[in-house]
Image (cartoon, rainbow, N blue to C red; front, side, top):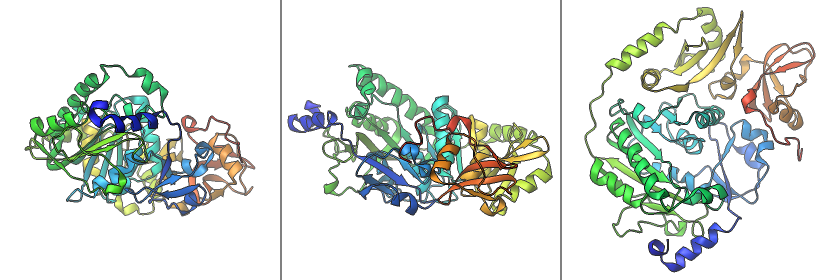
Length: 458
C-alpha cells in the first residue's frame, strides 16, 4: 500500500482501518415506499451516488425493526451503492442482467431497483447456504421479475450472448473488510491476492461467453491491491476484448482512480477518504464477438419441465385471484407442485435460465397444495404483485409483530376472523397467518425467524 498510494495516503488508510466508527447506511426500497421506514430511522444525510441511499447518525438495532423484515429498506455499505452511478453510464436499457456472485443480496436488490419492471434479473450464488440468504433478501425486496439461482460460472457459459449486463462482485482477499471484520484480517496471507486473482480470472473468463457483444461487465472487489483490481481489468481488456468506460465522479466524492499509471477509468473507495468501506469497481463494454446462442438443448429441457408442470385448473384460477394483475402473469406448477407466477414479458427467458442452471426461485411462488386446501406462500405476501384485497388484514402492534417474526403464537385482533390473513405492520405486509377460533397459526418461515432478544427497546 505504501508503494501503491504513497506514504501519506497509505498512513491515512491504515488509521481509518483501525477506527471502529465506520459509517452506517441504508437504502430504501422504491418498490414499497420508504417514507414510513425513513421516519423511523436516524437519517443524517444522503449518499451522493445513490438516490435511495442514506447515512444514519447511529446504528439502530435493525433486527428489531419490522420494516427491515418487510423489505422496506436494506442495510448496505455506502460504497457498494456506487452501482447506481455506474448504471447511469450504460447507453441502452438492459433487459437481462446477471448478478453472478450476489449473496447476501445488497447489490442485487439495488440492480432490481434500477432496472425497468419488465427486465429480468438473475441473482446467483454458487454456495448453497449463501444462496438461501440471497433468496430470502430478494423475496423481501418483492419484485416478481427475479430468478435466484445456485450455480457456478460455467453453468451460464452455454447461454451464449444472453445477458446485456453481467455484474461480477468477485470473491477477493477482502482487504476492504479489515475495519469491520477481524476475521478478514486473520484469514489474509501474503499469497491471498495471487490466489484470489487466479480465481477471479477463472470466473470472469468462464462467464464471458454469456455476455453479448456491446454488453457491459461490472467488475468489482472489496480489496485494495492492484493484482486483483487494475491488473485484472487490464487482462480483461487485453485478453477477452473489452473497453473500460469512465463513470462520472465529482472530485468532492474523493474516489481514487487508477494507481498503476495505465490511465484506466477505475474507481477506488478508500476508508479515510470516502465515507464507506473499501470498494474497487470498473465498468467494461464487451467489444469481442459473442458466440451465437444455442437454444435447442435448453428448449428440450424446458419442454420436459412443462410436461411435469400439470396441475388443477381450479387451483390456478384461485391463485390467480391473489395477483393484482393476473393477466400479466403465466401461472404454472413447479416440480414440487407449488404454483408460481412468471411475468409474461420474461417467462420464456426465465425458463431458458432454469434449463441451464439450478434455480431456487422463479418469479413469485404463489401457493402450496395442502390436501384440499391451497395455502398462500410467503413470497406472495412480500411481493409487489400481491392483491391485498384478496385476504383479510391482521394489523399488529410492534410488540405483536416482533412476536410474529419470532414465530410465536399470535392472537387475531378480530376474534371473528377465519382463514388465511395478511399480517401487516404500519401497512407493510410481513407474511401470512391462518386465523382459527380465537387464535392464529403463525405461518412465518421457520428459517427466517428472529433469534435475538427481539423485544429489546419495544
